[in-house]
Length: 71
Length: 243
Image (cartoon, rainbow over all chains, first blue to last red; front, side, top):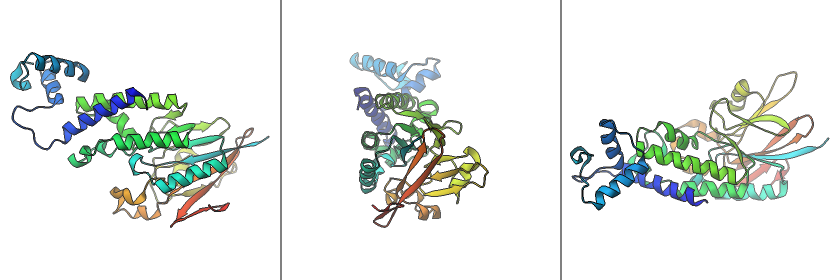
């Protein structure tokens, strides 16, 4: 199996596990909810770009719920 | 003028493969030595990507299913692959899933899968009513299958003419009442039938069998004939005898 395939499976597994999470804690959100919140503001970005942006926000301590983050 | 041999298998359904059937098929392939190996689709099951899949189904993930599907391709080494409706869940999700994250990751895995086919030199077609493959000599159209009726081979012949397909898990033959002859076949499956629990309340399941199809095709005229190998209980029955 190619490395690219392994990476794609792992990413998809993660996305599926996010969907199957029964109950989210307070202030917890999915990457898709983050993307949707940006889309609602007219900004369309890819999942890869979102992951990068979330990493940056996390590193800088600026990560909050999408509806209150000003994302 | 000479005849070439082909071998067609279908519906192993990834992690739900029947290991005994897979082993028997590979042993048969070693003996039959086909020029053309045909996989008629549903190489994966991909139940977590089913529309309306439960949280539990999604939590199962797809790693094992996907790995088993690739292992099947490596063992059977098909030259031709017609993607099935179960395989198509990945391609469908990559364009029409409402969840953006899932859609993008499905698109990546779909592209990676196409690369895996290319690496293995497998000619393939997507699951689409107008897409089919044929052997270089011509002969039957190779499709996964779309029609699920009591007489699936006849139904398939109505739309595609001479053809070999999977999908229905039921070995079936339709010999055409036609001046040119011709026929259509549907092939048994290679999945563990008991494990395909979604059909437990469907009487059609009673006609499901493990099996595959082998045949010959004339390299000049494209004339062809094929025969089923069918498992009844623990016995594998072929026109050549008990395997």
